[in-house]
Length: 336
Image 1 (cartoon, rainbow, N blue to C red):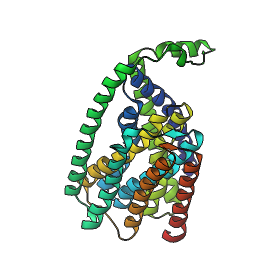
Image 2: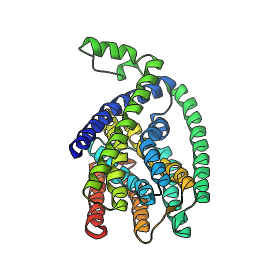
Image 3: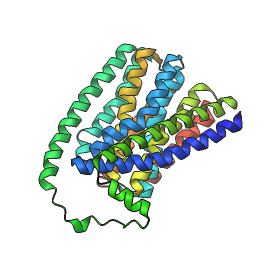
Image 4: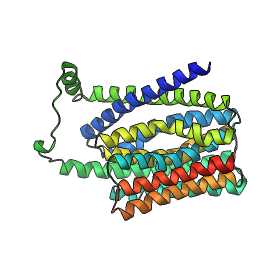
């Protein structure tokens, strides 16, 4: 049985990698066709898609009253998204952070990170009314985001005069490559490619998480540590692969927007919806420490972006990865 789950782990990872490749290509193509900022696509479509595993796992955990996995998944995923995924992505390619993000998306991320700590500590749990507060704030953010997107869309329509010479692309050498390039000009195919890629990302992520949970339980790892490590990293793999692939393809706005959007989704939507099914116990001091680390990761992201003049370079990536290693060292040396 153990060998079967190891095989499924590998299959899930393969689905993640190829699915993310198609997902990024489709999302970037739709953004260009509709003249929508790739950042907005990253903050919404891509972020929601890559957060689907977190939503599925946390809701299922809440229904089963496994609140350690549910809250650990949210906090652990947010920590991994910034410190691990942005760290790796910024080592692959320098990631510019849009000016608009400093006025809306990053402040909302900081608010979300502080709010989940405040609500959790206040009642020692995230109850259903706390979930309604999180969902309500999320709804307000989405309205502001789409209003901002419409403004950007009008501005982009006026400025969309890029000469063809700046859009140099490698010519495909195979018949399949030529067919794919021709199909990429069709909106319906881009939508199909995005949906198929999303399905592969979510399916692969879910399969990988279930396999990882079985393997972790096989070796008797505690539930809260499973939530913070195996489940958190497992459900963050769609973000990891999607952002890494986006960075490698030069779609840096999607790479950054994916992480910011996913973290906002995780707190407002994943934690909010999960708490409607069962109160998510917020244990002191462990969950408080995890929440503060998640908030600290968001603050570190802001500091690195400002220090790099709205860019995340290799130094920022190295600092994030070292911070991630430090947190995991604490988990395995102190918490277990």
